Length: 218
Image 1 (cartoon, rainbow, N blue to C red):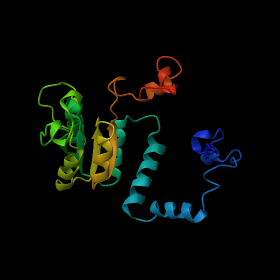
Image 2 (cartoon, helix red, strand yellow):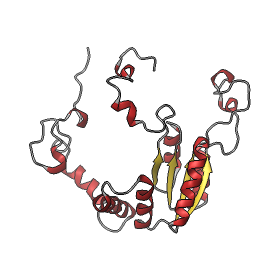
Image 3 (cartoon, rainbow, N blue to C red):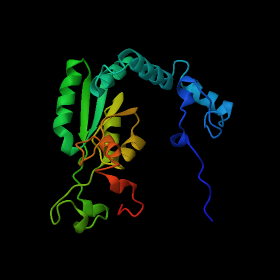
Image 4 (spheres, rainbow, N blue to C red):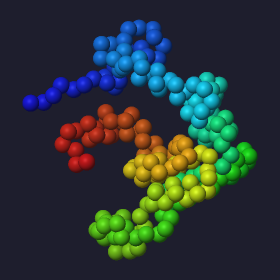
């Protein structure tokens, strides 16, 4: 027997939580969440702690620069508002040129950068149980992505804010898990769309109709 789907925010057509110009639906997570739980979250954004500083910085940047700054500029503005001076970059080997440009921009804006590439350690994939037939290029030395070591080296470098630049799906999750500094993202990898993952959503009704098929190979 199939259980009834529990409705969530993606099922809402009102979005009354944003400006409160309508009515909350019966299943709304805002009205169905205990006020104490909401208040506990709000406490993180109040006072003088790191969470509060980051929350206010993010809100200020949105309010002042809405639609005016690029992602690169927003990261710089955010870093300066939270007092971050040393920016760590966890970079994909395939986006190392973009990382080099970003480092130059950070330097021009008075920020220090320290980058660690995903292939750090140069460990062949077979060492963690990946067979030769699952390498991108079979029969040659092919290093694993090493997000845990990326995080550990940036932790040792005492970075104030870490930036993900093109790490693979899952590798970014591991990096975020082990990073001591707060993490934000510059580029989200999507090899097919030129690192614009939203393109697949925008074209799911035509070019990427396969995304909505239940019998997908994925």
